[in-house]
Image (cartoon, helix red, strand yellow):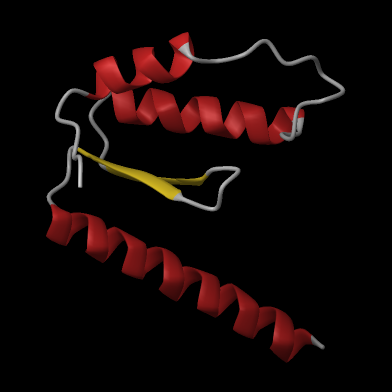
Length: 94
């Protein structure tokens, strides 16, 4: 497993490989695009992150930034817990 240490080089590599996408073919809404940009800015300013992307061949690509593997697992656990709470709130509201 490759765990990058230099987030700036990873972001530069991602941006360099970016293909020009017109607004009609972009999978992200403008709000999602803005949210993603704000998350990248947070990572650049030193926030810890776990980034997971599933490519077209259903392979997972992931990166831990400013976090150890244990810290990354803890962050993923928090995401799962928060998602479970939101689902439970919706189910209780039905």
